[in-house]
Image (cartoon, rainbow, N blue to C red; front, side, top):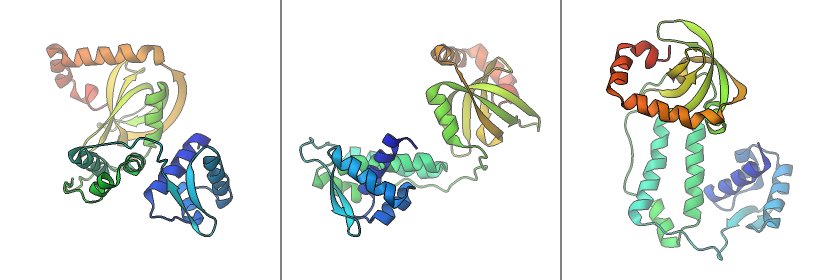
Length: 245
């Protein structure tokens, strides 16, 4: 993990856990040694973070009072809590953790009254979790490839039981109650494909950048998806255009 990411994760953990939080608990939550934790605490303090406490006593992160507090309406706070709570339904632990950390960071900067509102929200998101097929590859690799606009090598099993090895340019991911889908430009088919992520058996970073092409590809996909003729063709070729063959 990059040093900056590690320090940010440590700050988020101190915001999220009950105070004071021990060095042992912080080390377990962030996945580092206690020795590294003490160095990171010192680094954060040197950078201006207000962290009270010491080894053996526990730590408390105090937000800088010189910073202007964020202000949200009660409904906005409810909306934020509702959105992050809904992430529990999509079975993506990394994404859920990211949402919870971001929310903890926001709540930590709220005035006391608004922070209390976040602890007593009246809206909840709940529905019976769908039976989702197990994903065998790391979604973090897919996200990183989309963000960095770099190609991937995949081994894919389509709905007809046919396996193929492909190089793809990942463009975006979509979540639903039933499955996670990956929109990509497939170099094997020389066209757009929607892949069921749970049907990707193997995944490797190819490393080739397609950054000069990404914006044009997305514009092309959106235009074709809106065109009636394209929609009819996609419906006729559902196994290829929609199911990732």
